[in-house]
Amino acid sequence: MKPYLNPTKISLMLADVDGALVTQDKIITPRAKAAVAALRTAHIGFTITSGRPPRGMKMLIDDLKIDTVVGGFNGGVFVKPDLTVIQSRFISSAVAERALEVIGQHMLVGWLYTDTDWFVPDPNGPHVARETWTVKFEAKVSNDFSPLLDRAVKIVGVSDDLKAVAACEAALQSELRGQASAARSQPYYLDVTHPEANKGGVVEFLSKSLHILPEAIATLGDMPNDVMMFEKSGLSIAMGNASPEVQAQANFVTLSNEEDGLAYAMDKFVLPTVTSVSTS
Image (cartoon, rainbow, N blue to C red; front, side, top):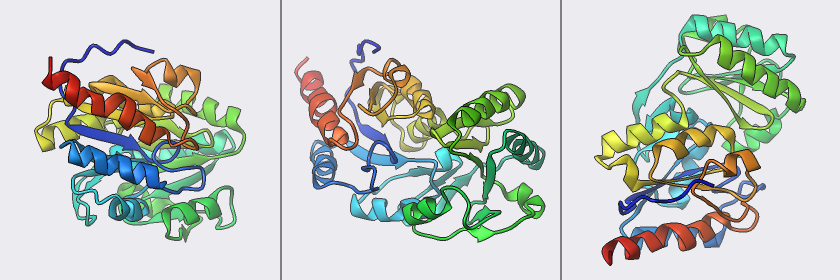
């Protein structure tokens, strides 16, 4: 873990969703809801970011009474709590086309998201049913993504061959460096987004739009793509279910998402900053 030496009071908590905020069954626990309420009482804001589309986070926004900017598609689209779009970051059509080619070469299935819809080649393909249940809306089926390339906010490579997903990630990061962000949001999902659409970019956008210093933002996540927001924020927390590599990049490690790790982190690491800064 990295030492925590930040003297700035935390003003905003930014949490990843899948693997962090919610359980494996995609549920927000009562303790998590209570922890978010406790932050609000302490005048610490709370928001979320995810590779999910904004529509796939609406139920969480409502349940947690989030009242500030939310980052969908890993920062590809920023919305208000009512899903009004503040900013969209589209991938260039050439990069989207090439990403899909490389995904196919590694035998992954390619999905495409616009700022409003989700497209898959096969409605019975790997993880489509699970994703539908998670985001609460169905994909549209298309065998030709060509007409959609200039509207792509996120391209996803999907496979249960986790080594192939990791190899595809490395290939796309090498080939598309500076042109796109490519990172796994789950071991079986590889997300390709605009180069500024990454979790670190979410911290930067929130800092600028909400007039909060990056040092005053705390972050919580579990996947390699969350390390980018760890690096930009003042306080970083890795989930207990994160890999050792991800945990090593955070200031603190909490319990897993099956053990109310978010609630534990708020109580153990975030709320104490209010007292420690005010009395220092």
